[in-house]
Amino acid sequence: MKIIRGKVVVLGCQGVGKTSTIIRYIENTFPQQTTPTIGASFFNCSIDIDENLKVALQIWDTAGQERFKAMAPMFYRNANAALLVFDITSSKSFESMKGWVLELKRNVEERMVLFVVGNKIDLPEIREISRTEAMQYSNSIGASYYECSAMTDQGVGVIFEKLALELMKLSGEEMNHTLKVTSDAELMACSTELPPTDTAIEEIVNLSFNDSIAYGNPVPAGCCFN
Image (tube, rainbow, N blue to C red; front, side, top):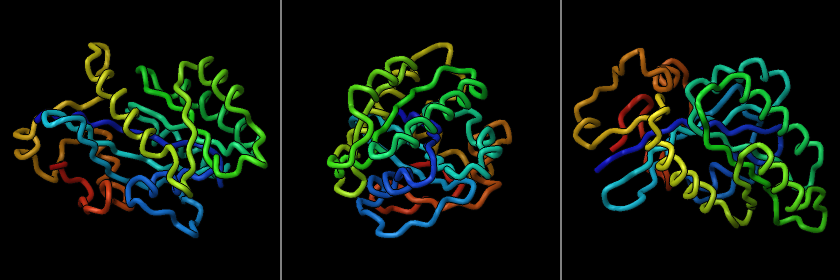
């Protein structure tokens, strides 16, 4: 089986539901209470495309508070995709998200998969950003636009499934140098002491984060996927 391994950063201001959206997909549950992310949290997620292809996502859930913004470039490094999340009931969160796009452009040179994600569609009565406005902005930066509700699970699975498919396409581009494509045999041969040139993994080993894999199967930090 071929395995495509990509690094995904999740960006957006505090309170838009970044962590809740990830946990909804990873653990198939909605956290009733979440504390603000400090620095970043890390998750593993493995998605089967077919019997011969798997996409393994290294998801970096970044802090949305302004005081942590200086740390963000550390988490952008070697990222292959970004989920830019805003709250459809908050115009302020939409404008803030645009600032994260500028940060990405300054810090990431290789082409990335960009998804703009409008969360909280379970609150249409207080919506401030229309689907049309969000789609127009997404088109202007070369991103795909999706809407979801972490609370009700509407649209969440589609986002991660489409992301896996886009990374599959990206892996076929000759210009890409950081997206990892390996086989089962190669992964079985590797150890937890990964080479320092693998910067995405090096970050994982050097920092202590919450690790989990889709629907609750634990994966130790720094280990290969199986």
